[in-house]
Amino acid sequence: MRAAPAFTEYLVIGLDPELRKVWYALIVALTYTSKMFEVHRRAVALSLSGAGHLLPYHAGVCQELLNFAKTQGQRVPLEIAALSGSSSGAIVAAVAAFAPSQLESFALDFIQQRGRGLSLLQETLENHQTCQQSDQSTNKQTPMSQGQPALQIYTTQCRSGEPYAFTFSSYSPLLLDAIRASCHVPISFHPVDMISWSPLSLPLTFADSEGVLIHEEAYVDGAIASPAPPTPHQLTRVVVSPISGGVGTLDSDQWRISPHDTSWRIGSVTLKGSFPVRLSTQNLRALRTSVGATSSAELERWYQLGLDDGRRFCEDWEKIGA
Image (cartoon, rainbow, N blue to C red):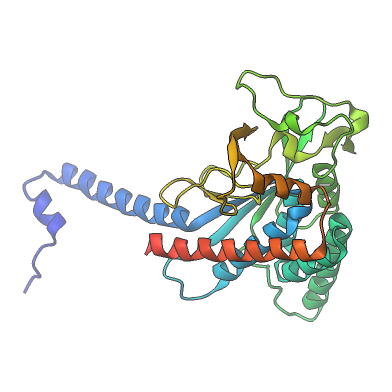
């Protein structure tokens, strides 16, 4: 006996064969689109802001998100498909992309030494590359051989004042030069240069002598033009910053992971790239820490705060997506 027709078959009864083909093609297309939406729904791109010595906050957040992403059996899987970073955010983005298993030890070394981010980054990446080569020579599986996120290091081009991204799909010697440029503060820079006064305002340019030369082009700190660097538009954007500001939701195309801020404030400003920042006493204290006026104990607190905020994001991710 023939089984009862499916609901879609009832809908096309009476249609001529050509219209019936069109109907079935539409059903297939809608099903495919729905599945693609679910894939992009769980794939995120992390935008790590400039933060100076507040780098441990970035490390804590990324550590929690990476651990959550590799945990099996999640109701709503999280895939970190891309990472973008400016200034100290670029340092953490590189470790998270190419040496994720070293992220915790990197953060703890930074806290203990109260800085030396670039030197520690070079040591971390070189040690990780040595371990990978050793594993490959003994036919062992390397941990990031599958699913390694794309990495973009944002700088500010001196002659144009515009953001410029260096893109990496694997470790390259050029990576350290790009990050060095992304962290290089020009002598003539002033913090107000990061404020977006008007959509029509011209970008601030710098002399080549103030920048880091890469392929005969000069670049400076990425956070000047991109405080929270761009991410691939097809992915859910998650901005990570130790500076409090606007808050995204899981129902939107953009999230923001930042410390909860109930301190006194006089308003807010918008930095370049539509990045809102509160003018609060909490952010004023964070600014003091970011320039290096800090202790290992204080940096440890920022690292723990990053872990807590990252964990909270993962909990919300499951709740909303369930």
